[in-house]
Structure formats: C-alpha cells, structure tokens
Length: 393
Image (cartoon, rainbow, N blue to C red):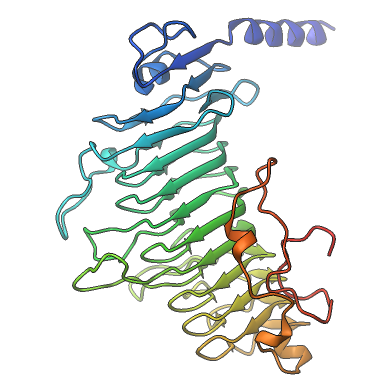
C-alpha cells in the first residue's frame, strides 16, 4: 500500500537532483550559466541521470574526442543539446585520425567526435558535427534518442552505430559529404548501423546525400531496423579525387555482407523513402535473406537498378521504380510484389510525375524539424503509389 507514495518520492528526488550544466567555447568556469565549462568532456564527466548539458553558441574544437560512457535511466535520461536554438558546431579537425593514412587502422576509442560506448538513456539535440573520424560513433549503446543532428564532411561515416544496439531513435538527421581517405571511399556512409544486433532501432525523416559510399548501410546488422521518410541521393561519386576509388553508391543497402560473412536474416522495414541520383542501386538487399517489407518507396534516376532483391522473399508493395539507368527491378521469384509500378504497368517516365524539382526537399526544414512538403516525384495519376513528403496525400 506504500507503492504510490514511494514512487512519488523517487520521482521527486530524481527531479530535485536534476541539474542544468553549461558549456561555452570560451568558458573557464564550473558549469553554471554565468561561469560555464570550457570543455564538453568536463560537463559529461559531471553529469548525472536527469541532468541537461547546454552548449552555448559557437564552434568547439576538442583535441580528444568526447567520451560518453555513463548512462542515465529510463525515467531520467541525460541530455546533451544546444542551448535553446543557438547554433553549435563540434569540429573534429584537431582529433587524432583526421585522417590517418591510406590503409591505416583507426582505433575504436578514437572513432567519432562523439564516442558513445556502453552508454544508455541519453538524448542529443540540435548539434552539427564536422571534420571528425566519424561524426557520431556509437558502440554497444541502447535507448538513446537523437534529434536534428547534422553530420557532414567527416573522415568516415557521418553517423554510425555498431554492436549491441536496441531502441535507438534517430530523427531529422542530415548527413552528407562524408568520405574516408583511409579506404578510398569504401566505407563512409551517411548513416550506418552495422555488425551487431538489437531490436527497436529507427531512422525517420532524415536526408543522406553526396556521401562517398552509400547513403544508408545496414551491413551485417542482424535485427530489424525501421526506416521511414528517409531520402538518399547523390551517393557514391568520387568528389574528392581518390586515385583508386572504391565507393559503392547505393541509396539504401539493406544488410547482407560479403561472400565470407555469415549473414543472419534481418527483416528490415522501409517506408515512404526515396533514392535518386545515386551512382548504383536505389534499394538493394545486398545478400540479406530476411523477409523485409518495403512500402511506398521510390527509386528514380539511379545509375543502376531501382530495386534489387535477389536474396530474400521480401514484400514489396506500392513502390515506384522509374528512369533508372539499369533494370528498374531485379527480383527473385519468391519476392511478394503487389501494386508496384512494374505490377500496374504503363509507362513510367519523367512525365509521369508532377515534379522533378527536389529543391524544397533539399531546402531548409520546417520549424518542427520536418522536411517541407512538395510534389517531388508524386505520380500525376494521384494514385497512392511511391513515396510522398505530403501528409495530405
């Protein structure tokens, strides 16, 4: 009979102990708003469950990456964010490994401007991460939330998660122009969730473009990942003049692995997403034998096939493949396909769409963080087929 009062007291104690910690690029103090820390790491070290770390405006240039290795709790996560709507840039150019030489290894501990390992129940908001050995690198971390992060011009993937990872949410991510001089473009993706397992992970309303390898890569991740309203374009081109270029250039690489890898089926879900203008495929299972679900996605004007599912009996419904340089689709017979552009037939050409102008989709996000609506690649027929950025369709 004491449970309700006890719960209230626990919540009250947690709330009472939550603190606001402040950091400034020019700070020299102890973490108050009038005397902020000058080091993000100092704030992280001081933070406890329920605390919020506020980063004041400006560019932070750490000489060692920010190690996040402690956890909050489900009821009292630790938050790292910009102060209000101030612009915060984390510049990793002074970190080790930016970059190491060709074919040199990058130690695990040096990966990421934010290196998040064995750390659960964190929230991250409104941060820009550039010039790092990865922007965000997360290993064996779960129950974390990332909103409005921009990861670009890093020397490896913009945002990568590995190992045991469950119930992580990434929303409103922009990740672009990431490259890997150490590997001549072999592995720097916009977003990667690789070599691990864990359920409940999702990427939503995000943009991945002009990365040297793939837009999205789920290589050897063994559990279902949900991908919704994700837009991937311009990936896989050698914009950096690598002499022995090895970038792949797929919009969405949905798991799988190489011939020597043990591939565990993963039933990823991809909805309402677009791949266009990539060097290779739009959507590819890449050897993943899991029964994936793809609904209302569009592959347009990619340098190879639109949809390639040669390893899995996945379900493809109401997708559009058009104007891709290779075959529009390459599917094995066990794929369950219905209501797709290649099922309904007809001519699917540029004239089939209301607009080929991606300017609005590529422009500034709305005040709510979402990509603004447009008629980009909406069929003129008005049928509910292919991806849309409009909520009223």
